[in-house]
Structure formats: C-alpha cells, structure tokens
Length: 84
Image 1 (tube, one colour):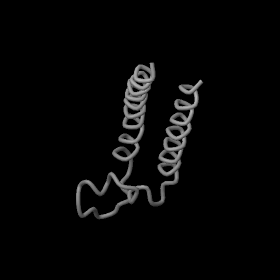
Image 2 (spheres, helix red, strand yellow):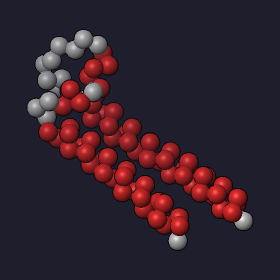
Image 3 (tube, one colour):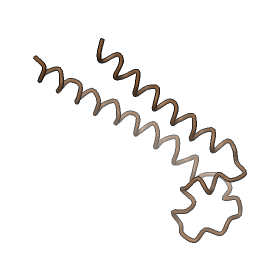
C-alpha cells in the first residue's frame, strides 16, 4: 500500500510540476524577450534573458516575483493536500 501511495505521489508531482513549468515558461519568456532592452549593450545574446534587462523596469521584477511566489505557494499546497 505504501509503494502504491508513493507512486501516486510521484505521478501527481510530475503532472503538477509539468503544469508549473508550462505556466512559468509561458509567463517569463515573453516578459524577458518582449519590450525594450534598456538600450544596454549586450555582450551576449543570452544576456537579454537575465534580470539585467529588468533595470529600470519594475514591472518585470514584479512579474518574476509574482510567478515565484505563486509557484512556491502552489507547491506547498500540493504537498499539503496530498497528505490529507
């Protein structure tokens, strides 16, 4: 019975975190790639996908913060409701 419960938890976790990954990528990739680039000289193309591109744009930081908080809370709720 314990092995079955463990496997159910692993399957549920995989589904939950797949959903979280899709939502996160769907939110954060457009946040970083769209909009102005702060007129900074990027040494590397990948530098625009860092928080360096959020300088002077507090809405980008708030989006990242909100997504992080939502993921953290939903992860804790997932574990809490799985235990009951």
